[in-house]
Length: 131
Image 1 (tube, rainbow, N blue to C red):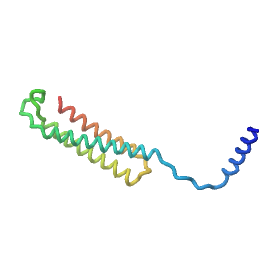
Image 2: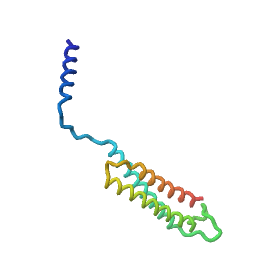
Image 3: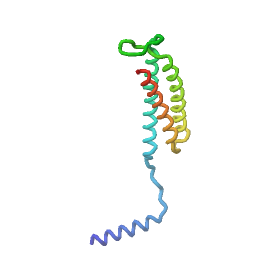
Image 4: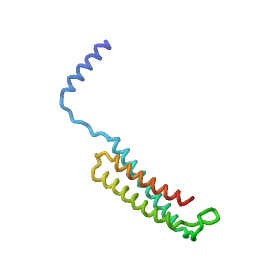
């Protein structure tokens, strides 16, 4: 009896599959993941801005001195590199957000990689200032 019911259900399902049906709206998980990733990049940029501002707020190192535990200061060369890296990061993050808003269904992998790379560059410049 179970086999008969299963066969009937299968045949009915195949018959109905030929009918045109209205598709129900579905959640696009790729979009949700992308938005979470973009929010994460925006937050990382915010952290980088705060770290850069904190570094630039330090007093400048005197000529011939290096920063350390006893001499807390900022190198002018690091500040210059940091400003360049922050400009690149701001541009990359803004481009990423604008691309996602303008074209939500387009693959943003390259723009995402550019933003991540720019933020890693900022992180590296900040790390070099601590040495």
